[in-house]
Amino acid sequence: MLLEFKTKNFKSFLEEMDFVMTPAPKQKGLEYSILKHKIGKKTYKGLCSAIIYGPNASGKTNIISAMDVFKEIILKGHINNSDELRSPDVSEGKLELIPNNLNKSPLPTCFYIRFVEDDLLVEYELKIDLGLFLDKDYSRKIVFECLRINDKNIFERSDKLEFFNLNSIEQYLINNFSENEDSAKAIARNNLNETELFLTNGFKLMFSSKLVTFILKWLTEKFIVIYRADITELKRKLDSTESGKIFISHTTNKAAKLFGINSNALGYVIPEDGAESQLCSIFKDKNVAIPAEIFESYGTIRFIKMFPLILKALTEGAVLVLDEFDANIHPMAIMNIINIFHNDDINKKNAQLIFNTHNPIFLNSNIVRRDEIKFVERDEETHLSTHYSLSDFKTSGTTGVRLSDDYLKHYFLGRYGAVKDIDFYDLFENLMSDNSSEDESHE
Image 1 (cartoon, rainbow, N blue to C red):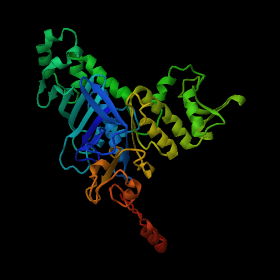
Image 2: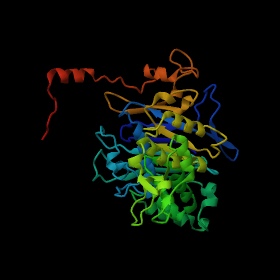
Image 3: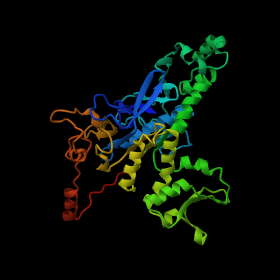
Image 4: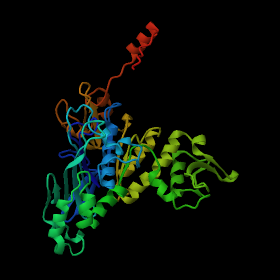
């Protein structure tokens, strides 16, 4: 269960962006839809969902990009560029695209994550010096790295590598570690690489492969970040399907019928030549499979590709982060999915749903809590993004946000910010009256 994610100097977020997935304090009348995870005598609480609002180009997608890039850096274990991308996010492999483009001197890019899984509270912080925007030849280095487990410091890396009492993770240490502890620490301190994460290299090899594997498994299987709609999570199931066959998920087809597809089935055709599988509309009575992009609407295709991820999140207790999840999908379907994540009888494994949107229909206290409504606003002069929650507003006074308020109405009145008044009238009036073009060419 994700509790918190932070980033700083990441694209439009020059100052620290703190994305909190824990209930806001002192929110009267909101004691519902709270996830709970107990470790020992302590109970950690989390939000079921978070919906991010803001105008175009405000920085909503940059929050998801930050999660995606951070995850990729940890999984590959270094801060060098890579040609192989796990997602359509180009900055994942070209880290020179990350620093804010207004910086005059290099500032570190910072990441922080806090999550709970099984009997562990994991906190990991990373600060990296990538130079200035687009400086791909800059000599990069890791300037800070820290791991905390169950509120105990494990290691901290800055100019030097410092270890703390490792007895708190004794059960995760490699065999006979105590006999070689001093030499392992000495070797680790003398062999730090400026571009390699200590977590996934030295610490994994010489201290605790079990603990690092636990963290990497959570990031891989429980932190599902989809920068754009794709079928990466479904493809794993298809890889074991025999070529020349059709893979049909009965659960997905039942969902498709509820979505409105009744005349045919949907499945993936696996070509015999080893080519990539293709989503098709299956007409069993005619023994015909037609590419879905020809027969189905774009919204239908997006739903079919997204549904297995929703199913995975709920059955495995994962965090599902989706960019523009609701695009081309009817809001009633999205509202039902949100309600399912909020349903204690179904969401028994603490699954979480995070997505950005432009659809104001979810700005409703009957659908989500105040602390689940997030905003991103971009300053017109500095072009920098800021992030905040509806729960950051007071609950009393003239500017207070009450449970009974019409969130949608007040949002469009500009009461919460993160909305932009767009008027193209003068532009088109000038173009039509002058019958001229203001296009310019540059050498």
